[in-house]
Every structure is written in structure tokens, then in C-alpha cells.
Length: 206
Image (cartoon, rainbow, N blue to C red; front, side, top):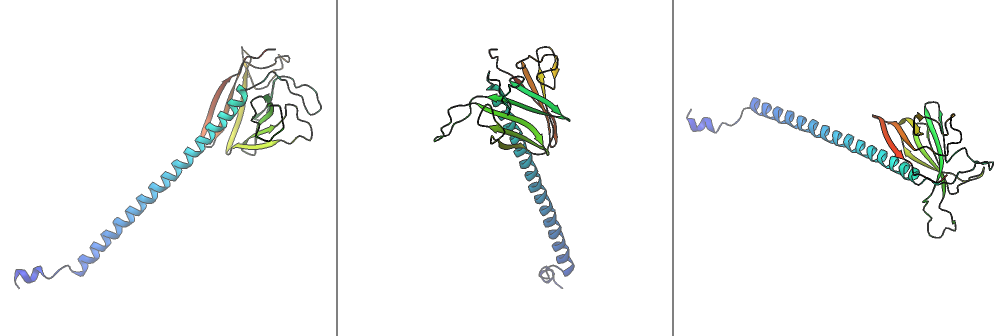
């Protein structure tokens, strides 16, 4: 047989099967790599979204605290609260309540006051912000519930009185203390433990 006849013979069936197998293997590897890249991109996107939620929650809390007013709120029975900020530790988590200014009044609303009572606490693994459109809510006041964060394992607020830190306000040794000098928020959110935010409170007239 001449060389030209051999050249026109082409690939054998075994060679074709080997080539198809290699192409299938390369295709499977490419598919695995693509799925892995898409999965990683989704995970990164979800974590970025959660971090943005954490940053927004801390921003809202800081804004409320920096707008703390000299107004000492009253409880539902009309009695004055113990201080401008009232906080306690329930179990391993904190509950905090105070009056702040700067509440946005929408067009058409007849409410003249910009004061608002807010409460922060952890409920069922969520960081909740409750707000009432009055400084002194009563038993039938409508509280608005806002879920700031999910997957919260710990929410602790520590208060600095100028010399030491405490998890309560007012502290048992200074029941007449109107407000702390500053505070620190510590949270465990999902895969991120010990998220901390320090807030220096405004100096208000006694």
C-alpha cells in the first residue's frame, strides 16, 4: 500500500473513542470549575450582603444614640425613667431603651414632636429595633418593629461611667447617674464573632 493510501485512511474507531472520552472529561472538568466559581461567587455575594446589613444596623444604632436628648422618658404608668438611657442584661443579652430626637416627620403628618422612644433587644436570634412616635408611650401606644439583623447569637451593651464598665444603666452604685459617658456594643452575627462599636454620647445639660 502506498503512503498516500495510508494517509487517506483516517482515524480508527479506538482513536475516535479516546478523543471523545478526552473531550467529555475536559467538558466535565470545565463544568465543575464553572459551578464552583458560581457557588463561590454566590457565597461571597451573600456574605457581602450580610456585612452591609451589619454596617447598616450599627449605623442606625449610632445615629439614634448620637441624637440622645436631655428628655428623661416616662414609663407606661407616667413615672419618670431612672435615667436618659435605661438598660439591663436579660440572660446573656442586653435590652436598651432611650429617647432621641431627629425623628423624620413625613409630609401630611400632624405630629409636632421629633422625639421618639426606641428599644433595642435580641429576640429569637434577631436584633430588633422597636420605636414609638412619642417620647412617653403608654400601654396602648403602637410600637413599630424593625428587624435589623438575623442570625444574631449575642447582643451586649456595656456602659462606661468615666471609671469602669457595667452592663446595666443606671449602675447600682450610681442610681442618680443620668447618662453614661459612652457605651460599647458587642455582637456575634453569623460567622463574625465580637463585632464591636464604641459610641461617645453627647454631653447634655443636667
